[in-house]
Image 1 (tube, rainbow, N blue to C red):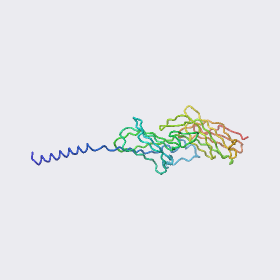
Image 2 (spheres, rainbow, N blue to C red):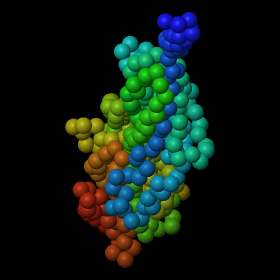
Image 3 (cartoon, rainbow, N blue to C red):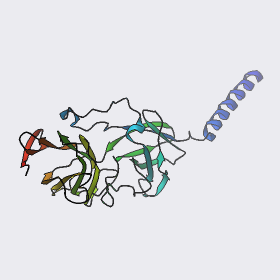
Image 4 (cartoon, helix red, strand yellow):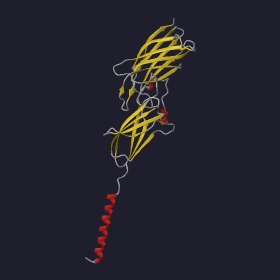
Length: 288
């Protein structure tokens, strides 16, 4: 072998060895998990059954449906918390909300997210001290972290239903609605496992359409609804109308409805409930 050929072979060998060495000593790509949160339940599943109610536009920003956000990330194996946010107030016009997790060790993690929560009420409590609270959203997802950049979409779903009370042809002097609802679920986790039972009391200025966020009816129970109507002068004493107690079924992401029609000519109140896709008259109350 000539001296030049020998020298050339040595150069090639050294280059190959150097290249192998550099590849072996390069660190792995840093992990980056980008989680894109979106709203799944923009409209109640049976909103189309109520022409009086306007569906939400699906082009509304994320913050329109969830004005606050909280999340917690735990190691799936150890159950230890590895990331936790404060309750963040959202007011931008973005269609989604992005969370980025950097430099987490490879493995599986559980992400729990809550929307429309406040610092005043513990996470997961749907009704505290008999209060309506807010339209709670939640989500849970498993994140598989690898040494690479990834994006995963997670959908937030609604945890409550809505009770709508339609008040039709009411005399103008009736101005206050009081309602009591019991029992309903008290709490829920990020995977929509409901627990406990509680009640709701609410007194509000009367509208033609009155809406209340209500947790689902506990399994095996029947939710009872009491409605009373007052004039401003009579609010502290006797109601102008006290509707006999009714059974209602509250479901997640569904509207349950009651309608009270005042028939001045006939001298009566008619009370209707919306059940299994149709309106049913449950009471006809003559005016004394």
